[in-house]
Amino acid sequence: GCNTSQDCAHPGPAEAAWLSVTVLFLSTRGRSSFFSPVLPSVSVFPTAVLDALRSACGASEIAQATGTPFAPVGSEGIDVCDWLRATLLCPSNQREVVMHGHAPGSFTIVRHQLHLHGHSNMYTHRWVPLEQVFSEERQEVSDDLSPRSPRHQRINYCSVHLVAHSPAAVVARATVAGLVEILIGNASLRPAFKSRSPRPHRTGSNELSFSVFEEIDLVPPVTKSPFMQLSGLSMTAGFVGTPVVLARTRSLLAAITLPWCSALSQGGAAPVDGLQISNVTTIFELRTADGPGEIVGWQMLRHLPPPLKVASPASFAAGLLLRVRGKTGTSLP
Figure 1 (tube, rainbow, N blue to C red):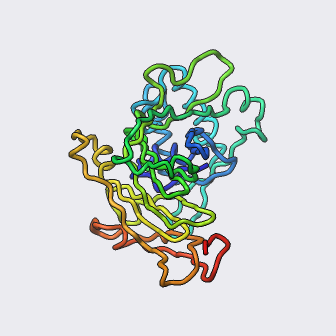
Figure 2 (cartoon, rainbow, N blue to C red):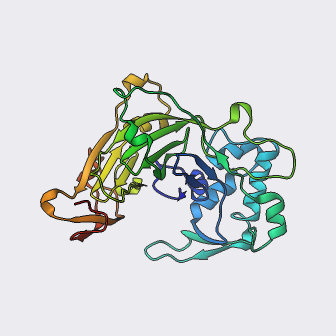
Figure 3 (tube, helix red, strand yellow):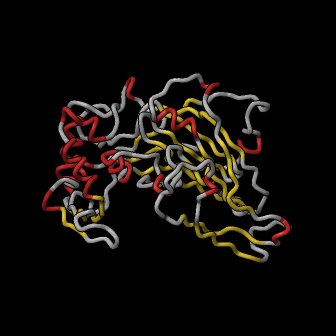
């Protein structure tokens, strides 16, 4: 599973709130789904985010509250606003919290009881989040046009990351063999609840469907225990305007920039052939000359963004990388 609370492409305040309560799941065979909203009993939000939700919360403005024009309307929209008023926007649930380095009043702690171990009867009757499964449109692609070779078809998926939320969701997922797939959806991820009523969810044109837009093969070296983890590069780190996906294997840390995703978020129209292709930049790589070892950890260092846009994530990305030297249990002879 993957929480989408950070590193998504430049979300607005209200949209950021929904990203923070959306959880993605990925099976080893590639089945993807998400639950929203999933809210811990105690959480901390920027006060500006809660203010944006409060000003937008209304049945006639629910699209703004969820940060997407594809938001549910009618009774389902009222459900979302009722949930907000019982959790994030309830005054008795909120308390100002002081965060080091920030002005007083910048953050609010939210403590609520609308969960399984609190008001369980109310929660199970109406507020259990619905699992929403991605309906994927798969296309058969010949081997000479795609890195999806028989080697990849036999390998399990291991990591998923939400790249962008609106106007359409963009999701990256990876296999342990080093193949990264970029999927694009027909709508944004939005909240939905299970209900004892017969009211349907996501029917007809509202069904959330995805298709593979791009495939990137990082071709990592073969190991006994292959591994890949995807994460995002925060927009506050300085790479303004273009989503960046970080891919980490046992021997490689790479940044995948998706400039076509920026064109999509800006509402531009262009033929697929005219979109700028994705770029892969190697941030760090273990080579044979470095001797046995592997990368076992990576943490991005957050800092103030530079005043200008930069052309490559390697020109500004700063982080802590943990490397183990010597022969490991995952190394092949």
